[in-house]
Every structure is written in structure tokens, then in C-alpha cells.
Image 1 (cartoon, rainbow, N blue to C red):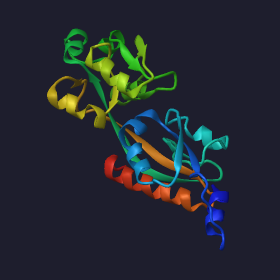
Image 2 (image 1 turned 180 degrees about the horizontal axis):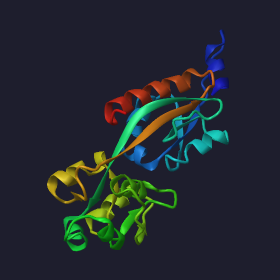
Image 3 (image 1 turned 90 degrees about the vertical axis):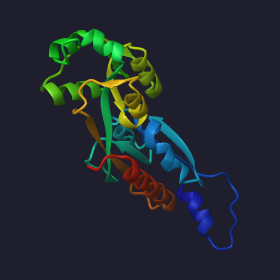
Image 4 (image 1 turned 120 degrees about the vertical axis):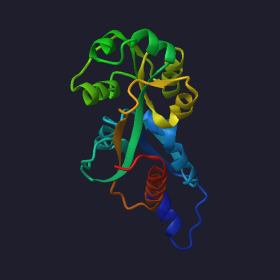
Length: 222
């Protein structure tokens, strides 16, 4: 990246090489909801995205394998700056038929323990975080493993289980009644932060400004 920008800035030189590629770690739900919009505002570079859970994406920065990351960690990685983005809001959702079958007397710790849930992968703690928020403890249950944001929604729609889906992705399904919120007054807001290496790079600065603008418009305020 630095070499590419230096070639542009040196007097008397012409650089017609390929666009620079920027490697960034981002969680799958951010990519499915708002991050692509930020990418579209930065058209003079190529992106190489690494998908990882927001609780682990900062590890890629620590290893020096990416230049920036969308992470749930506010504490800056050594050699990086951290800026709050906002919160990605999740809703515990299920199909109406699943809700009637598994929660005939309401959502409580006993019914949740018997109802199958959806889990993205072994790093996904969103369902556990929600039960801690609502009931003050972890509630274990059988789970389907579905490492895809769209498959998570599809599985909820067909009644495979309940799971935490980004509000932006399921808002229309909730309005139409194809999905219902397990406890409507209990969303889960996951704070996100933009961490980037302190490299003197105009290109990374442009990406940062696009990310902050998009996040400000699309995420919940912290």
C-alpha cells in the first residue's frame, strides 16, 4: 500500500499498476448488513476480506495479517487505533409455528432449554449472551450449526430453531409475521469498533472515513 502511494506522489513518475489490495477482518453479519455499503464508497482499491467472529477479528490485527478489523473489542491492539462504530442490533427470532410448538406457556428458562437453537459456528456466543441478558445465566440446548447469515434466517423461517438475527435482515419478516421475536422488548445490541493499523496511508484513511460514515447511518448509537 505504501509503495503504491509513494509511486503516485513522486514527481515525474507515472504509475499504471493494478489497484492496491487492502486486507480487512470483518464479522459475517456486518458484511451482510452494512459493510458492503462502506466498501462501495472506496472504489480505487481492492478488498481482501477475512470473515471471523467480532470477538476474534482483532486477533488478525495482533498477528499482523490484516490492516484493519471490525471488532467487538474497544481496547486498541498494540500499534492500532480504535474508534467506536455503533451497535449491531440482534433480535431473538423464530417462526410462528416454532414459537407455538416450543413456547406454549411463554419463553422461560425451562422452555428455552428444550427448544433447539441455531448457532453460526463454535465462536458464536450471541444466543448465550442473550440468555445472560434476559435470564442472568447461560441456558444450554440442542443446536443446529449454520455458518451463514442467510441460512440463519432461512432456518428460522422454516422452523428449525430460534436464533439471534440482525434486525436489519429480519425487519420485513417480523413486520409480515413470517418471524416473531421471542421477547420483543429484549433486543441484543452488540457494540462494534473499527481498529486499524497506524500506517501512514491515505488509502486506509479513505476507507476509515467511509466505514465511519456508513456505520453512523446504519448502526445503533452506543
